[in-house]
Length: 363
Image (cartoon, rainbow, N blue to C red; front, side):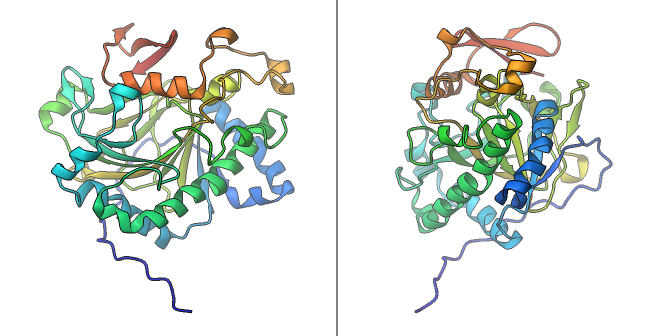
């Protein structure tokens, strides 16, 4: 049989790794290959539990893709951002404010960051099934690879992490997995996102913040590590610290939905994007993300049956009868993010009310 021929793709050149001495967060590194056996899951579960209780962030390694496969996916990620005309992009702009879906393009300068400064972030979002939406012509030869990539993220990275999180709550391993079905209704999606350099004036007006401190909407976010050092998390001591680049690693973090389902046990950690260090300024920052949410009809309720929660207690964001579904929460937050007025509470915290729940932003 003839071998499979993959289409050629222009190479995307990332920035060199920074040589600056930065204050990095001390995050756990999880060898996800160990999660294939019951013994490995028992070893990893306490590590994941502690990481998600404190930082809400961790690194994942040995996930099953080689560096070369990672590099090719990074090359493909730049196709919809750099190799599609503005005229064609206009046909695929997402209905973000209208229906609360990121599917398609989010153009640059769509959000307000601070002091009237608009964002310099463009991203292209694909539903995890890939083939159930239209795509720009330049991306179409790569759709089978994108589908394989979303399946890999879902089954080989997300599901193992969800099993470890369930074990951390002393629940059956499949508790969270059963709520994250690949073929169910929901907007778990793949995102290709590029941050473009900004003017000195914009940097001054925003105090070098490219994306305000926030928590993610869904359950687990997966960011394929790339070398431009700009992601910062708010550490438990209240200080912002950088997240270090790990070649062929994945950065995983908990979102609001996981925090609410775990009764506050796992933390949706506050993170932001900050101006890169001096030796990386002038470079674009291209990222690959897999943003997971539970099935659309899943109500975001604390898992009261957890023996752990019975011991430590449950912290609720709202009364159970007011808890939104995954779909309701995602659409509500998507519609207003970066588009609605925030109420300043102090020098750091700004708030907005979404579906009756307080959502905080940190500057």
